[in-house]
Length: 180
Image 1 (cartoon, rainbow, N blue to C red):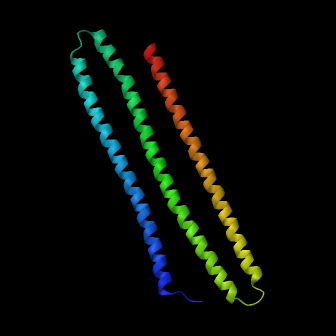
Image 2 (cartoon, rainbow, N blue to C red; image 1 turned 90 degrees about the horizontal axis):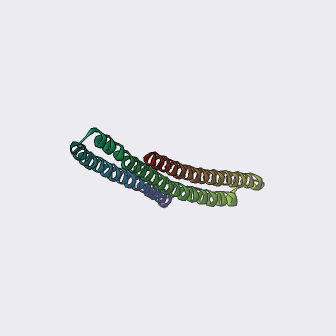
Image 3 (cartoon, rainbow, N blue to C red; image 1 turned 180 degrees about the vertical axis):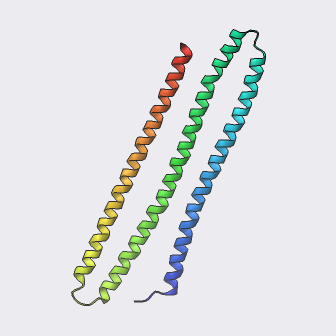
């Protein structure tokens, strides 16, 4: 059994496609993070200008303090929204990269099984047991990988639920503080 130039070319093409998919996902995430950060900086700058103008227009100390206190709630809400957006981009990017990895593992498994089948046809008599053992180990590895993927997805869902709960808690605390 030998490797043909077409097989090498096909493997190289698959590797390049995988690399490009990973690079594309990372660049997309970088672009989203840059846009989020630029928007947050712009918003913070505009808010600080507006807040400074409002504070300069205060007629007495009580109004000055009241204005300062009123600035906290919108700042907290914007920080929470920014954090949630960053988390969503990170989760989306992780999902894209996981899909690329899953596709690549599936392709590798398929190629390995095909190779194993070809080798087993040309193998000496009695090697059926070894081939079956290798296939069994591959199936066990795939099962472990599937379980790991499921656990990772569940962990992501739990983390997302915790982020949402923490966001709601902080918003509730800020509203309670404002009401008090």
